Image (cartoon, rainbow, N blue to C red):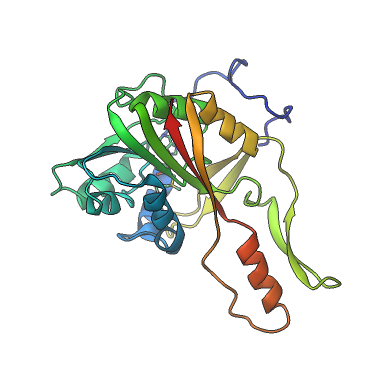
Length: 276
Ligand SMILES: C[S@@+](CC[C@H](N)C(=O)[O-])C[C@H]1O[C@@H](n2cnc3c(N)ncnc32)[C@H](O)[C@@H]1O
C-alpha cells in the first residue's frame, strides 16, 4: 500500500494525482467503536494530554466563532463551550460520528455539526468567518493534507489561528516505530524503521461482532506536514511536543530507562498556526 518513495520536500501539489475518488466518509466504518472509545469526556489521551494542550495553545476563545475540523463525535466541543466560545461548527466526513455529536449537543443552540469532507474543493464551510479552529488527531487521517490545510486557511479570518494536534510523525508511525531495550547501555530506545516517504498504513480495529474494520493512517514526513500548512498561508507560530502521561508500572531494572524514554520521546506534535 506504500506510495512510491519521493524526494524530500516534494508534495503532491502540482503533480498528477490519481483519479478522483468518491467523497470520503472518514471513520464511518468504525464510528461505533470510536464513539465508545472516546465517550463523553474523551479517551485517556484526550483527557490527560490532547484536550489540555489544545485549550492551552488556543488561548482565549471567549466570544469567538470556532471551527472543529474533523470533529469526530465532538470530544472538544464541551471544553470550547466552557471556555466561552460564541459559536462552534464541527465538520467531519463520517455521518455516524456527526449524528452522535449532534445528539450529544442537541440542546446547544450555538453548536452546529456538518457532514463534510475536509479535503473537498472549495467547500461552503471554508468561508473566512472563523476566528479560530482546531483539528485533533486527524492530520494523519485525511488523504489529502494540502487540500485540508487550504480549506482551513480559507475558513479562517486573516489573523485567525488554528491548533492541530496529531501523532508525532518522527516517532509514531504505526508498525514502523517500536520501543526496544539496549541491554549494554541499559536504555530504552525508539526504533524508527521507515520515515522519509509517505506511507498509507491500514489500521485494523475491532468493533466487536461486526467484525474487523479498517481505517487508513497517512504518514507524512515532518517537512511535508509543515509545508502543507505553510503553502496554504498558515504560518507556524508555536510548536509543542507532547509526551504520554502513562508510565510503566512494571518496576525492576528497566523501569528507570522506560520512564526516561517516556519523558524524552514525544507521542504527539502540537502546532499553532496563524492565517497570514
Ligand atoms: C482519530 S479521529 C479524531 C476525531 C476527533 N477530532 C477526536 O479527537 O476524537 C479522525 C477523524 O477524522 C475524520 N476524517 C477522516 N478523513 C476525513 C475527511 N476527509 N474529512 C473530514 N473528516 C475526516 C474521521 O471521520 C474521524 O472522525
